[in-house]
Length: 222
Image 1 (spheres, one colour):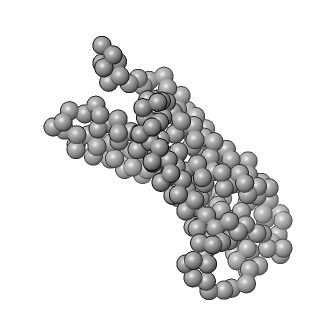
Image 2 (tube, one colour):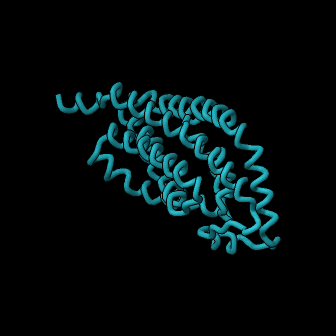
């Protein structure tokens, strides 16, 4: 559920923070995802499933806190760090979950178990998350749209190609003509927006830590 907050509204948030190419900047998260995907087998052996999923969920918390604290003053390094955490947020939670399900499920129902996991995490969970994120976005959207229009008006219109867009992934500038009060009020609203999924992720991580144990590990030790 908390992950849906990132998927649904990270792009307009970054645009409000002065990112010239939010979509290109978010590709840093996909690069991070590929990098950590390669390290999953190593960490899976060293840490085990419980700690890997815990790290993934605590990465959610850290990312949302970075976004929340970085929003009021548009602290670029915090926002980039939050984006780069996507690899841990996704791989250590979803990929580890799929690997664990494959390991413990009986051979004759492995496919059904994986399908059920996808249904509950990326189906039901994401559906609830997107609905909750939309409700939380409601007070942010009017000022966010106004700020987005002001930023767009302060930048010269130019048509650039894919590679030029990709090359601007690190470009973060705020046009001088943007109203400071509008920027401040919108940033504060974004801070409130990101703190909610951070709290949610802390609660979910706590429940998981208390309620989950790797039964397959206990069986193998016996």
